[in-house]
Length: 179
Length: 80
Picture 1 (tube, rainbow over the protein chains, first blue to last red):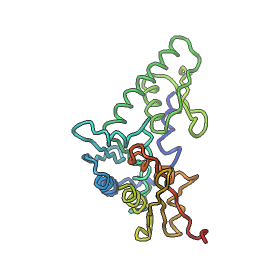
Picture 2 (picture 1 turned 45 degrees about the vertical axis):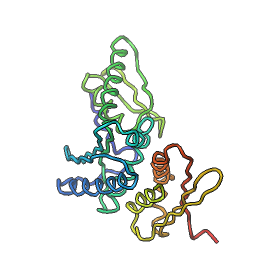
Picture 3 (picture 1 turned 90 degrees about the vertical axis):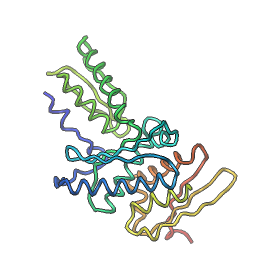
Picture 4 (picture 1 turned 60 degrees about the vertical axis):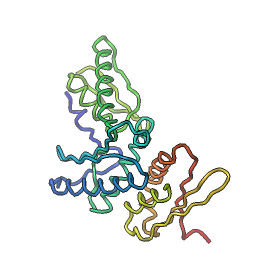
């Protein structure tokens, strides 16, 4: 029932799948390369921020956090996380260049993704509610592959079906009842 | 700072970081940062459908704090 939702991964839009050699050491190296790349950028731009690296579920998570709400760090998130996505992409490329491994690392800044994750789960719950109340299919706004993955997972958890439709920047999720 | 930041961002994603040069041109409409890289790295810096160049512009614009900045990737082979 939820097969559709698990098929879609972060990799569908922009990367080929990495070979399944996700040895912890490779992911740690990936985290180190990425952290160096970001740390020097923060240095040059004179932005305060701590960089945390975490490896879990075969993926490297990097987060930049600051003690207070630094507007400069907020600028690196950008509207709708636009700058964050760009910086994540460049960071992945820096790992590719240094290690020749295609990276699927996830970058977060000031907890933007974590917070957005909560929003996305609410969006999923609202859509499911509409289907429960009789809507045939509920189309959501376009989202990045990463965000769609969060919504797919949330919808599947609630026992409903979601599929991605549309191309490129118009790719969005449609929620419907389970068959 | 912007030129230095851009240079760092580009150096980290190419095969020949020593060949990365960023120069700054100013005119009335603001600054233009010109990026030059080894010919073999040009594809990497531009990316598929200009994706990487776009990411570089997005990050530089964020660091520029509202000031207008252009980022041009210069194909030195085609210049005469």
